[in-house]
Length: 183
View 1 (cartoon, rainbow, N blue to C red):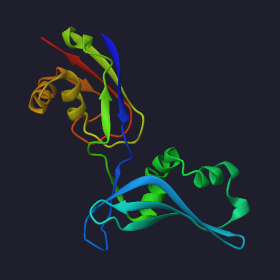
View 2: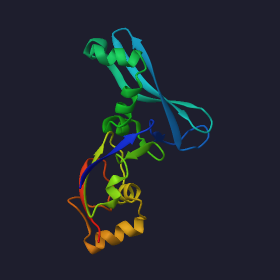
View 3: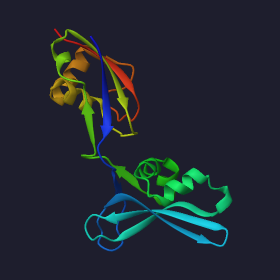
View 4: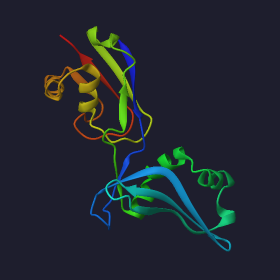
């Protein structure tokens, strides 16, 4: 039986970065932006709040760019505090590297398996699709989707009853497929 699973984000991930005020390492993004125009130059920041003390940190999105070089639709989304733009920018590796932060996806996603009718089939072919770049171990997804323990999933891999073209023990953030053979 062939089925599709989807990894769906449920909220914006937390930002992992050290707070200079209290030492906490988690910030919450609410999708708010701050823009500053100095003559013809524009700066844009995504605002994130420390989960412990509420200190605001600005993550640089645009720095000293001419206003005319910014696409009008991007400028409108920044002005409108578009939460989808915040999600896109948080996942942008360039923004992460420039601002020296990582993302914490704990409790910020769910697995949609499309129901439990697949649990009775002998051979299960699954295509897993990610709606966002959420780094997860396929072993964890398979265990959750098939109602198995992680140890049981590891045993199935060793016995050759669970196969995939990707390494199932490593973190992935892109689509993959696997086949599960039940005895």
